[in-house]
Image 1 (cartoon, each protein chain N blue to C red):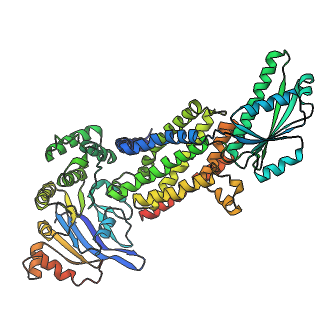
Image 2 (image 1 turned 180 degrees about the vertical axis):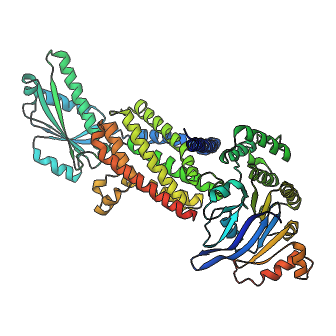
Image 3 (image 1 turned 60 degrees about the horizontal axis):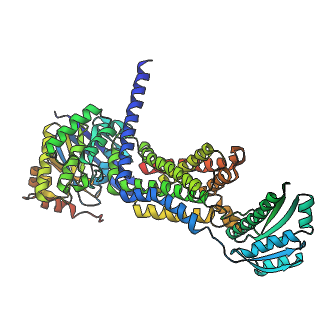
Length: 246
Length: 383
């Protein structure tokens, strides 16, 4: 039996009359790469915001890293990392200053920050750039850096919200290498994406349509289930039934 | 000390450390942006100098009416002194009080002086006499300047007499301001500039710096971190509090040493009241940043919503007394109005806290109101 790190049961979010997320139920296992797919406006971001403690669910239940999303958001926040689709480091700070800052607000000690930042900079091969402003780095490096910063405090789960938007294919590949490495270390990855080739990299994926989860399985099984050779077709098959258009 | 207390102490220490890490980051932001830095520290200096030198109107050929009931040596001497200078052009020398008012109403003259009968005699025998100076204070700046010139001329004459005679002579100028007797309005701009600069730095800069994090997406990262959202906001305000205090000091230094505007009251009280105003402005900046999502919107709201009312309704450029009642009532909710009154009272009139406690209380009330309003709308956003 695998250890469950995220568990939702009929998790729902309504904004007035509008049901953004409707009774979603799923489990995510420790160390897996869980792809969270859906067209724009399908409710991915809202669902994710509930899990990371930015938004209170309307009904249903969920636990993240064993903590309740209604009452224990403080504990959840200590155990997760997050990287948004917008680039999330400070451009007017150096690489090192960014690392020290994030280490600082996650409450790491000075010695710990020192070891962690040395490790991180060496791991990314940024020794020569450590004291340069982040603004001067190419986008691909920035993305890799912000992923590494999201792992700084050794979270159990990392939430990635369309992390590779606007990045070239080579860098995307390298980025996924980092994700695999993290997953091998037992960190659970919860990732939303638009790219179907990326969906193939995931252990399991869920596809949301109009606020509901319409499919949830490994990419191979889904392709079999929809009797097609590519994830693109699976996604299109499900998403074209959507009534919500953004 | 039991275990729980120790734990709480450790937690507080940890939060403090997080807070310091955040404030440090904020200082990097402020210090690295050279353009903002220039605005932050250059603007107060520029404003003081512009207001100080461009707006001091040195008057030439102001029209003066002289009512001479005395027609003696002293009055003649003073009149010829006035005529000799470049400041005044004598419109008429008459001996009828009734012509003064019509002349003012028609706008033919800016200022009038009245020598009483027996001017010289009183001066010689009683060693003391009076002279009346009446100015059209609908332009308060001009009125002050003119009466100051005349007073100076009279003082010169008086000290000339005191050199030749051993008894001290005294001519007491009795200055009357017509139409705007207390010279409220532009009588002094330093308190106005202080309000303006602190407002700009605290409201505008704070609002922009918070909204910027929303725009770039770093705010989300911060909200997902265990760092308390309220602390994010507080940490953002700290550098601007410090910058404001530095600005305050530089404005005061400039006004005392360059413009010669003295600080008559307590410096400590002035700084304490200014800190209250700064915190009010910071809260306002925070409130704007919660309500807006782009830097442009934050800037527009700050400028239109705060800067304009400050210029219009603080009483620093336009006298509030002359406004329609509705606008007079509205002016009461503008924090800068109260701060302006407080600073003027401390700096110019040199009064203590007992005189300005009411204004202080109103300012504090506005601050508390804004604070809870921000807190409430911040919580709603978090839902």
